[in-house]
Amino acid sequence: MALLTPEDLENINKQLQEADSTVRRVTGLDIKGICKDFYGTTPCCEKVGIVPVTSGNGIIGSFSESLNAIAGYFGFDSFITDMPDVSGYYEAVKNGARIILMADDNTFLAHNLKNGKIANNQPCTGIIYAEIASRYLKADSKEVLAVGLGKVGFPGAAHLVQKGFKVYGYDADRTLLEKSVSSLGIIPFNPVSPEGDRQRKFSIIFEATPCADTIPESVISENCVISTPGIPCAISKELQKKCGVELVMEPLGIGTASMLYSVL
Ligand SMILES: NC(=O)C1=CN([C@@H]2O[C@H](COP(=O)(O)OP(=O)(O)OC[C@H]3O[C@@H](n4cnc5c(N)ncnc54)[C@H](O)[C@@H]3O)[C@@H](O)[C@H]2O)C=CC1
Ligand SMILES: NCCC[C@@H](N)C(=O)NCCCC[C@H](N)C(=O)O
Picture 1 (cartoon, rainbow, N blue to C red):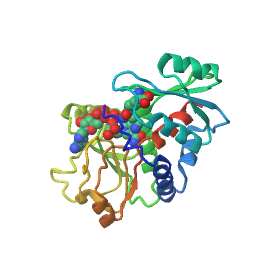
Picture 2: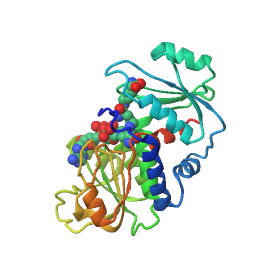
Picture 3: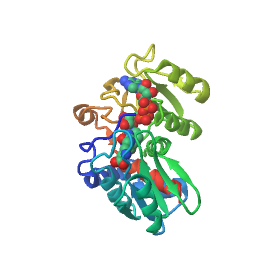
Picture 4: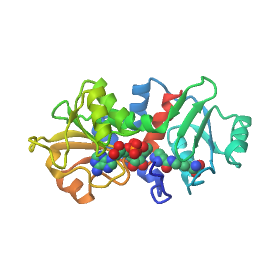
C-alpha cells in the first residue's frame, strides 16, 4: 500500500476546509451532513483515543496529530496517547477512549469499544468518495466512470452500482478489471484508449489509484466532478482549471470521518 508522507498531511485543517467547501458546492451538504445522512449517525461526545503504531515503516510524522485535528473538526473529543502500540492501546482505554483509531502499514482501523463496531479505512474511503460523487447536483446522467478498482476503488464502484448508476470502469490490473466486470457488472472502459467509445464523456468520475494524471480531458464532460482519494492527484491543476472540474480530494480526513461515523 502507498503510505502517506508528512508532506501529504501539511496544513491538514486547510485541506479539510477546502475539501468541505467543494463538497458543499457539489452536493449541497458538507462532509458532516453527508456522513450523518448516509450512516444515520451523529457524534455525541464519544472520546477518541489515537494510538501511534511503530511497526513496519514506523510512525509517520504528523499522522496522529492529523487524526487528532480531523477528529476535532468533526466534533469528537480526541487525544493521542503518550505511548505507542500495546502500551498506547492500554493507555487509551484507561483514559476513557470509546473509539480507538490506529494504523499499521496495512490496516487503518476505527474500533468502537462500546458497541463493538469496527471500520477499515479503505472501504470506508471508497464508499464515502463514491457517495459524494453520486450526489453531484449538476450531473447530466446516471453514467459514472470509476478508475482504479483496488482496496479503495472496488468498494466505491460497488456502492455506485448498488445506487443504480451505470458504472464504466477501468483498472490497469486486468484480473481486477475482469473481477469487477463479472461481480459488479461494470462496463470495461479505458479512459486513455477507449475502444470505439471515443466521445464518451462523464460528469461523475471516481478515481482511486496511486498514479497521477489518470483522467484525460477526452472523458471530462462540461459539468464534471472528480471525486478522488487517490494520491497523487488524478488530474493536473491546469486541466482542472481548463475544464472547470470540481475536484473532491483530501489525503486523510474524509475517509477518517467515514470510519468514525460508521462505528457510532
Ligand atoms: N485520501 C484518502 O483518505 C485515502 C487515500 N488512499 C489512496 O488511494 C489510492 C488507492 O489505494 P488502494 O485502493 O488501497 O490501492 P490499491 O493498490 O489496492 O488499488 C489501486 C489500484 O489502482 C490501479 N491502477 C494503478 N495505476 C492505474 C492507472 N494508471 N489506471 C488505472 N488503474 C490503475 C492498480 O492496478 C490497483 O488495482 C492510493 O493512492 C492510496 O494512497 C487510500 C486510502 C485513503
Ligand atoms: N489516507 C489514509 C490511508 C493511509 C494509508 N495509505 C497509510 O499511509 N497507512 C499507513 C499509516 C501508518 C501510521 C503509522 N503506523 C503511525 O501510527 O504513525
